[in-house]
Length: 301
Image (cartoon, rainbow, N blue to C red; front, side, top):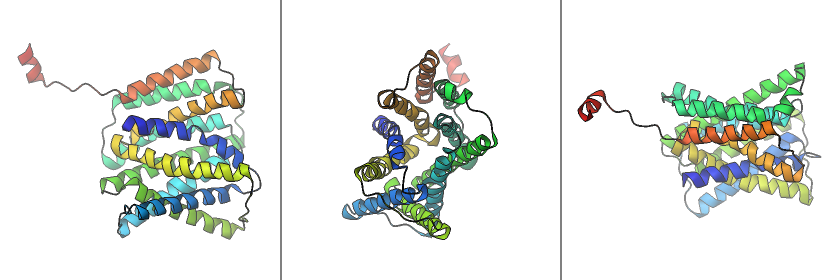
């Protein structure tokens, strides 16, 4: 089941970039995010109510959902989409892929979980491989003031994503399922962003065409309802640090799609980078060998 959820998350989030690109146009970025998560929350609530699986939550749980909505369904998307105006998508992908390491560090700080050597080593290999994949784009970009702002926003977005992972893990430890917390989190995130749009005077425009509506539906159903539920379920089952390795793998799916759609050309460094990412994936999910106590070892000898 974990493998299925993992592959599902990688495939879905590896293709949502196409839908995000198709949404650029008349509708402002914050408004598109509001539409996405408001509709996703509405759909999740409908599913939970019909199936009678909507779990009751106390004030503390709602407070955590509010924080999760702010981190995971509001601020991080604003950071990434704003950063994309100043730095290449490849550079954003590299920064976002550090979520594996941030999750491992945050799990250590907030939950006292030991950082497994294989997770840190696999994450480092994955980041190195991803840097090789995007090296032409990274090396050709000058470090201007806008670049530094873009990098800072991408890092802030990644930290918000990691914080959302920790909050979801905390909720699941309390017995709440991701579908319930996602429904409330998306509702809170969309509401806060809608208030921001109203205060800022951003118009709630809409493009009634196949391109925009189709991309919005893809982001709502597979990208949000299915993708975030699958991913945060993995966070609860596997731990935040292992689940976050999806962030290293889904750019690979995007590159392969780009090879067909936009003519992306594979190069020797990119292929070597792909190999490193795959090796990192194997290392992250390799179960460490149990330590044999010295007394037991002496008895065997």
